Structures are given as C-alpha cells and as structure tokens.
Image 1 (cartoon, helix red, strand yellow):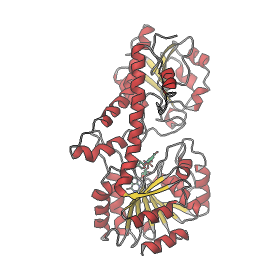
Image 2: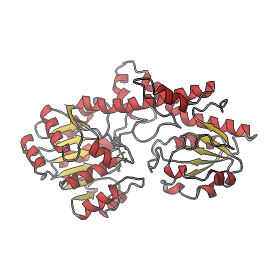
Image 3: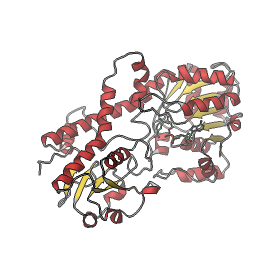
Image 4: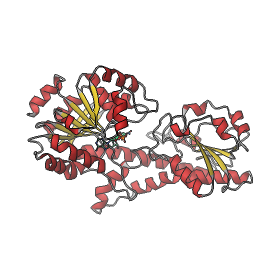
Length: 440
Ligand SMILES: NC(=O)c1ccc[n+]([C@@H]2O[C@H](COP(=O)([O-])OP(=O)(O)OC[C@H]3O[C@@H](n4cnc5c(N)ncnc54)[C@H](O)[C@@H]3O)[C@@H](O)[C@H]2O)c1
C-alpha cells in the first residue's frame, strides 16, 4: 500500500487502527479514534485490563471526565475491541505504540515494553502500514532502536514496505480526553510525506495545531517540554527552601515575583511524581550524556525535586520536636498517595518516597487516599491515635475537611503541608513548604 492509498483510507475512515498499550494514554487515544469512526483494535498484555475494556468499563479509577462514558459507548457500538493477541493487528493500516518507557535507578531508559511490542508487531505488520510511536522516548531512539528492530522483526524496509513516525502525547491524568482533543501535537515523520499522512490522521481527533517535523525533533520537543517543567518546579522548590531558611513566605514571594514582566514562577510542593516528569528529563539528557556533552542543569533540578519528600520528613521532625515528641515511634497520618490531585496515579509518587523514608526511621505511617483502593477510608477515623498529619496531595476532598474534627481526632494538633491546602491554620503546630516559621 502506498502512502497516497493510506491517506485515502484515513480520509475515508476505513483505515483499521491498532493501539498497543491501553494505559492512561493508549486507552483514551483508542476511544477517540473509535469515536471518530475508525475500527479500532487495542492490544494489551494485561488480561484483566483487556476484559474490563471489552466489558465497556474503564480501568482508570481517578476523575477522568467523559472517558468512562465514551469507552462504554464505543465498545457497545462495536468500534473498539481489546485483545491480547498481536495477530489481531494484521489487518490494521495504522498502529500506534503507547507502552510505558521508564528509566532505571541509574536513569538509563528501559525499553523492555517498547522492544517487546516491536518484536511482537513485526511478524504481523501489514505491508504499507504506518507505525507511530506515541510513547515518550530519548532523542535518537526512533533511529537507533525502533526502525532497525521493526525492520528486523518484520523483514520489511522502512519508508518502502512500511512507514514510521513519532507523535508524542501531551496528556495529563485528570484531563486525558480534553488534552488529547485540545492540545497541539508534533507529527514527526521518518519522511516529510509520512508527517503529512500523520497530520491527516490526527486531524480526526485533535482540534488544535498539528506541527510537522522529523522524528528526532519530535523526540527532542517532548522530552524538552517535560524537562522544562521539572526545572521550573525545581526553581520554585529551591526558592521555597530559601524562604524557609530566611523566614519568608514563598506564596507571597511568588505572587510578587510574578508581577515582574515575563516571570511565571511555578508552585512549590512536596515533590514531583507521575510516570513522565521525573523520567523525561533523563530521557532528554541520556544520549547527550553518553556522548560526553555537558548536562548540568537537568540533574541538579532532579536532585532538588527528588529531595522534597525528605524535606517534608525534616519539617515533620521539627514540628514533632516543638511538641516534645521524637520522630521515631511517632504515628503519622499521610493524606494523599497519588502524585497528583484527584488522580489515582501513584507512579513515582512523592508520598511513596516519604512513607518509605519515615518507616525506615521508625515512624508508624497511616495512609489515606480517596482514589487509591488500598488507602480509602474515613480520614477522621484514621487520624485517631496519630501524632501528626502530613498533607501531601491537594485532593478536592481534603479542602472540605473539618479541621476542628481532624484536630480532635489526632493526639496533638500537628500539621505539615507539602501542598498548601489549608492556609496556616490557627491553633496548630504547623510547618509548610516555603513558609518560614518566624512570620505572623
Ligand atoms: N501518563 C501520562 O500522563 C503521559 C503523558 C504523556 C506521555 N506519556 C507517555 O506515554 C507512554 C505510556 O504511558 P502511560 O501513562 O499510558 O503508561 P501505562 O503504564 O498507563 O500504560 C502502558 C500500557 O502498556 C501495556 N503494555 C506494556 N507492554 C506491552 C506490550 N509489550 N504489548 C502490549 N501492551 C503492553 C501495559 O500493560 C499498560 O497497560 C509513556 O511513554 C509515557 O511516558 C504518558
């Protein structure tokens, strides 16, 4: 099949679409292509996830406006089907790959899922199909890994027997459908012609700008935009730590800094989590570091952000000390285990780092999170017998908490705020990120 024929099938919505990896990204992408009128086949290695999707039920627990309804509708209409069999992709004209792409403890990309997807796809790849990697990857990965592995496993040549592109995602949990529809995308093609066909494809689901590019540019843009965010959060966190050290209030400082033209200081907090922001800066830096290029700012920002949960522990120790209690042996309620407000996503959660650190220091930790099944429960009941509460996530439910009832349930009125849900509440021994203790 030529690119021109493929483009005609895309325009006519007769192109079969395969989505490999039905997680936070792949599932809403599959739903949107099905909603647009394409026949969609989703592949995942998790049997339970596949079964849930085929029953029209979303496996994502957090607040995702519209996703559960859309999934139920497209499954009921027979336009989306999930499977564990790669053989079901052999009739697909377009295949997107949306598997996880983590880094290991040495910050090296771990592409086990991507490689296994490519190895399984190669033998069933239809001639003339377009394969688009949507997963975030280190610059150079399309050329070094994806293209050679797919050529090897399919026995076909890229840009002749199949086409290849990279169109990274810009979604965020909590806004998956809205981001997919409304945020612009970079369509990186192995050739300019492939990029054009990709733009025709994404036009069916994206209402924002689509920018054609080559693959390495798309790889660089995605990893750079997330590194940009990480570095900027690290800056806010560093200013917060400076405010604490000199007795200032980072919230006031931030407000006034942002009155200066061109400044947009972000919010400080308890750390940076999720699948993407903590690892994408390492993906950006990976090949350059391997080639000996100087990469200094990105590791420094990572260190600042990774240090924040330990800083929360230090604030807790300080607050307990004021109440005459040692950290070791204390019982502490941690509010929020997801990495993001109103989400169930616990990947790389700063709370996990805090909890592990506290437990290693002899603290008895009680965890609550309204979106994480194992940590659901009544906050006030969980607070009974606890010496302090640590607010790690700004879930909406926490804003509605009755502080008097919480204080009465705790053994003492001690609060540490990694996120500013309550504004320096009266009558508490209180420590907040960036809130110096010597102010009113
Ligand atoms: N989560 C986000 O907000 C977000 C935003 C932008 C980009 N991304 C990127 O998108 C990619 C996917 O992220 P995610 O959050 O959806 O991950 P996820 O873990 O939620 O989903 C990945 C899915 O792929 C499946 N999978 C793994 N190996 C497979 C294989 N060989 N064959 C078939 N399925 C397989 C897993 O079972 C899982 O369901 C990553 O590269 C991530 O960096 C994520």
